[in-house]
Image 1 (cartoon, rainbow, N blue to C red):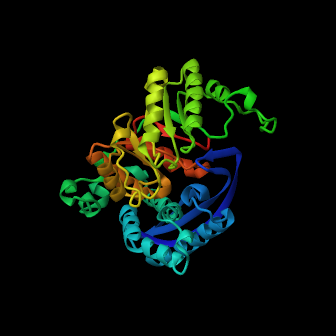
Image 2: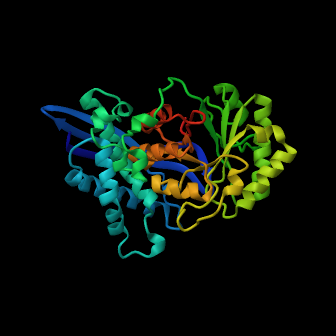
Amino acid sequence: MKVSRISLSFVPVVTRVPLKFGDQTLTEVSCARVSIEVEEKGRTATGWAETPLSVAWVWPSNLGYREREDRLQEFCEKLRGDLESHLGKGHPLIIGHRYIEDRLHDRLGEENSGREPDAYMPHLAGLVCLSAFDLALYDAFGKLHNVGAFECLDQQWLGDRDLSHFLEPAEKFVGKYPADYLVEPSMTQPVWHLVGGLDPIKESELTGDEPDDGYPVLLRDWIQRDGLKCLKIKLRGNDLEWDFQRLVEIGDISLEENVTHLTTDFNCMVTDPAYVNEILDRIAADHPEIYDRIVYVEQPFPYDLEANQIDVHSVSERKPLFMDESAHDWRFVKLGRELGWTSVALKTCKTLTGAILSLCWAKEHDMTLMVQDLTNPRLAQVPHVLLAAYAGTICGVESNAM
C-alpha cells in the first residue's frame, strides 16, 4: 500500500458545559481532521480520522492557550508535509512505528529549537498531533483490503514482522502478533460517564446559567436518564478535603442510584502517594460501601514519568493504579511497572500504533487495561470505542463527549 495524498483541516468544537480537570478548564477544542488516499495495484481507498487537539491536556503550561493551540495546528501542518514525503509503503503498524521511532522525535526537536525550555512542545503533544494521520492510515488500509483495522494484525497481514521487531525483550515476542493479545469484541460495552470538577451534583450548586436544551445538568438526572452504572470522578489533586468530600458526595449518590463502578482521577496534580493513600484509607474506614465500588485509581502523579520516578507501590496495594498521561509508549509502561503501576489506560489520541504496542506489552506482563478518551467528539469516538472492544478492558470504555 502506498500513500498518494494527505489532507488536513481543523474543525472547531464548543463544549455544552465547561469541563474542569486538574487546574485546567475546557470550553472548546479544535479537532484535526485528516484524510489519506492510498493505492495498491490499481485499487484506491481513502481513510478518515479526527483527533481533538485538547490543548490543556496535551500541553499543560503557563503559555497562553491560543499560542499553544496555534503551535499544535502548525505542527500538524508540518507533519502532513513530512508524512507525505516519508511514510513509505506497507502495513500501517509498520509505517506508524517507523515514523514514531525514526522521525517524530527529530520533528519535535526542530519545533523546540531556539525556544526556552518552558516553551517546549512536549512529546505527548507531538503524539496527539500525529495520531489523526496514524488513525486515518489504518482506516485507509482497512478500506483498501475490505478488512477491519483490528482484524489485520496477525501473521497473514504482517508477514514476518512479529512483535519481536517492535517490543523488548524481543525474545518474549518471537512468533507473536498483536492479534494474539486481542479479544473477540463485544457489540455492547459499559460506558463510563465523566463527572467533571465543575459539574453540579445538587440543586444548590445550580447558577441559572446552565443550558436549557432538554439534556440533564445534575448528576442524578444523568444517571437516571442514561441508566449509568460507571462514573469517573475528576478530583483536584491539590485540595485533600475537597477531594474527599467530593468523592463522598458522589459516592452517596451512586449508592442511592445503584451505580456499581467508580474511579478517581486526580489529573496528575499529586506528588506524594500519601495524599492518595489518605483519601483511600479514610473512604475505606468511614464509607466502606463507596470504597468497595472504587474499581481503580487513574494517574494521580505528574505527566513526566522519567523526571518524577515516584515509587507508587503503596497506592497500587490499595487499588489498581492506571497509567494514563505518562503511558506515551510501551517503554514508559515498562518504567511505570517497575515503579509500582499495575495497569495502563490506552488512548487512540497517542496513535493507534502506540496503543496497540502498549496493549501487547502490558498484557504480556499481566497488566490490566482500560481505554480512556480525550473527550473524543464525532469521528474520534469510532476508533476509540473499537479499541476498547478489542482490547479486553477491565470494564467497558470511557466516553466524555457523550
